Image (tube, rainbow, N blue to C red; front, side, top):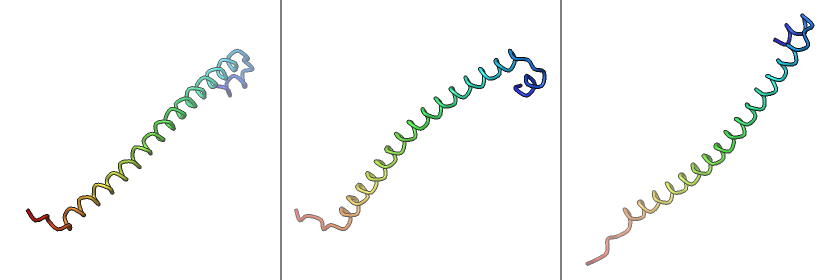
Length: 71
């Protein structure tokens, strides 16, 4: 569209094309920022999940190999 505006020397078409491009870029930037925030939260949730899995796995192994109490 910008090439067409440049070739036809149409200033209003070029201006509208640039305004639309600027709006699209702003929208994409806000979408990327939102996705980055979600990714950070997801990363922390995953790390906590791995830690809990290791802890509960260790507790289970400890219970399997520990001697049973005499009643």
